[in-house]
Amino acid sequence: MRTRFHVPAVLAGLLVALAGCSDDSGPESMPPLAQLETMTVEAGRGIGGRGWDGVVEAVQQADLSAQTGGRITTITVDVDDRVEQGQVLLRITEVEQQAGARMAQAALRAAEAAVVEAESNYRRFAALEDSQYVSRAQLDQARAARDSAMAARDAARADLAQAGRQTEYTVVRAPFAGIVSARRVEPGETVVPGQSLFSMHAPGALRIEVQVPQSEAAAIRAAGRAIVMLDDGRRVEAARLIVFPAAEPATHSVGVRVLLPDLEQSGQPAPQPGVTAKVLFPAATEQDADQGVVRVPYSALVQRGEVSGVYVLADDRLSLRQVRLGRRSGAHVGDGGVESDEVESDEVEVLAGLKPGERIATDPVAALQALAAQREAGGARP
Image (cartoon, rainbow, N blue to C red; front, side, top):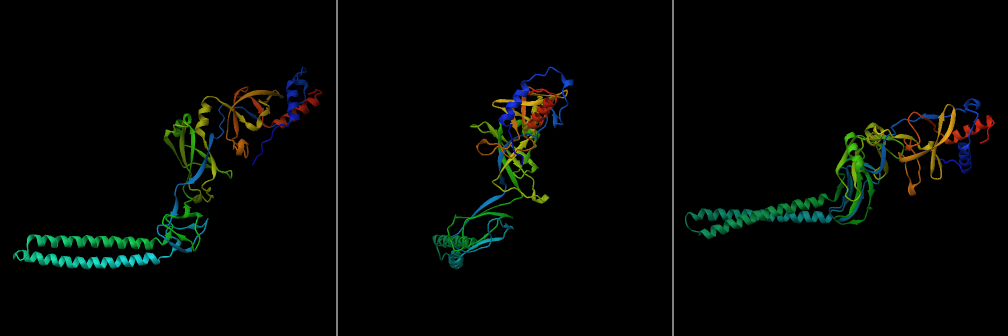
């Protein structure tokens, strides 16, 4: 983690004084500068892309609820336990469910007996019809009684199947292999149908959804690339991007769904659902590169009130130059807008004041100290 520092007020005052001094003796009369870390400004220098924050979520997740009522007898798992598909998570008493199943089974046997009797009556009436011992209406009544008995038997079979399902619901099993993320009941507690029991997710398939400006959507869709910056400092290449086909009417932003690769298969820990992550889209930077946008590290800036500047090195002479800044990319912003945990791609656009090919000092404090030492050695007053 790098910590942002600002030039103290005293040094900043000295900085302005040094910048305002003139030296008539020429560069040959000044002693050489101390060794400084510098960089050459380039147009469209890649920074990894513009970033937007999103929340990690599991593609496969489930909230398990009770499908029958009863008292919990056993809970076999707890939060953060890994479970396999079909593994037993919880058991509920099944006294009422088994009683209902026995009643449904008895009703089915009665319905089957009624079907047998109705079928026999119908056959008997059908055999007597040719001899005209029964009327046509009596035969129709026998046929209707048989059909009604068959329908009652089918209904009894359905009731028995439903009662059996209620008995099966007393054992709650994992619908897929994953991790238990929440447990909301305790042993001995009485539950009712619809009551939440567990939450679980599969860690292998994760995704992040972010909202990007509508002006960036086309470039992001065409590039099809993104880099996810996790809170532990890792950078993960997105497995796939899905750019939503329509923008939000209220915000005029476009949703982008970023699918992460299965990190656990490669031996890396997967981020937990619900944590925040930054998604960088290099496509936005590539557009800026085509326009020749100059970018410099934010740490190279000297800030004095609303005035920003950088130390420019030319012919072994160091001078402070005011610049006009554009948007900043790649910085993490914490609560209340306070910058924290900056990343290597923390850079800012320079709209005016610098040209490609110029050299700047990357450490303004070291540059100020080197400039003061040079002037002191040369007998000049800051």
